Image (cartoon, rainbow, N blue to C red; front, side, top):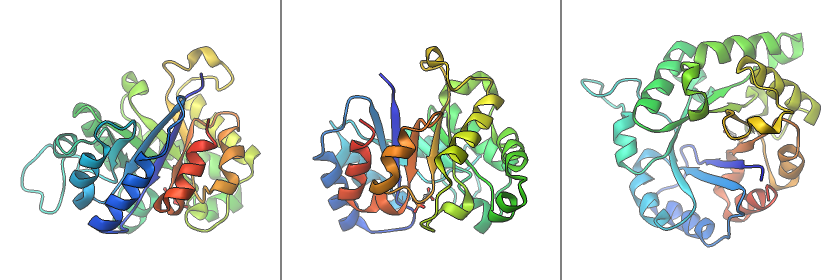
Length: 250
Ligand code: PGA
């Protein structure tokens, strides 16, 4: 059975009412056996979503965390707090945080390590910008960003990597399937796994794709070589679309 991860990043959308409605609609949907699903609500909705998810197969994640365990860090949230709130996953290094909050790969690495220490699974985001794609330097850029953002490889089964080309996020544009596979293979080679060798499945790091994933393109993206799932933004805010994406992973 090939496991597929379907992750919904709600970003800074919705309040309590929308969070409850969206969660209830997803919980009512029958998740296929091979699918691992998680939703990533804003911090203030974590508790309410956690209570809606009790007894469901859907896991909870947060969109960011501090690299620090605790202390005088006004406005930050530690991984221990997220674990206590019921989170299993946390996104680190999303391109919106790298761009809007100046987060370096070194900081992302420390956040990923803090997540693992707290028993969370970090979803580490990497991806080239449009300039790197067009100038043909994207593989070098992604290689450097990935190497600099990764926690120690001793933990390799304990994190997920999300390949999210910055130019594909929220734009309606996606790379071709061959381009997605090329990058996923490059990332997998950094972890020294061969994406075509199924026997590694049990221990290999999952590499998911993100950027304008919709019900219309999810099936072919999920069926592409080296793609272990998808990180969905916009389409995860509509239960019907998100459930269709889940279904297409079956
Ligand atoms: P999108 O966002 O699906 O809206 O393009 C993906 C993401 O930012 O994780």
